[in-house]
Image (tube, rainbow, N blue to C red; front, top):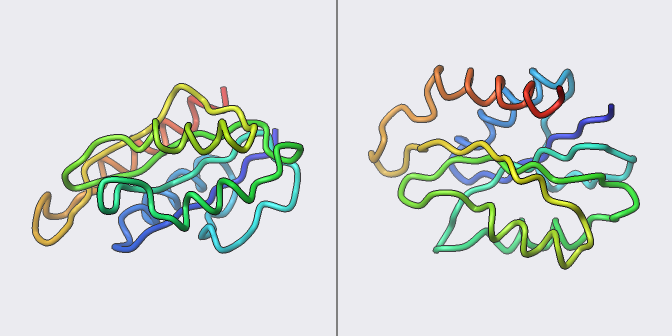
Length: 136
């Protein structure tokens, strides 16, 4: 099974989660600036809320994906105030013709002193366990 990890972050929180997911999946995490140009069964996509939506760069990345190369997207991320970006990512995945896994990983992320130290080591371990469960 081919697994790919891409992420978008402004604070570094999602990058830390992406690295934990990638390590558990036996691959590397890359920012969304690196295109997915090889067939992959699972694309773990890390992102967060910015101004009450996914960042336009995330939206454009999903729209750029080739449905012939990506089997399904698995969403993960963190946020200080809002919860899951799953619905926003699914909306874009649907437009791109790519299946979206119903499962996701989400945890609190530090932002301007809120949720100081998050994601923490327990969150990183939970993200890794989540990735392993997806690949079972």
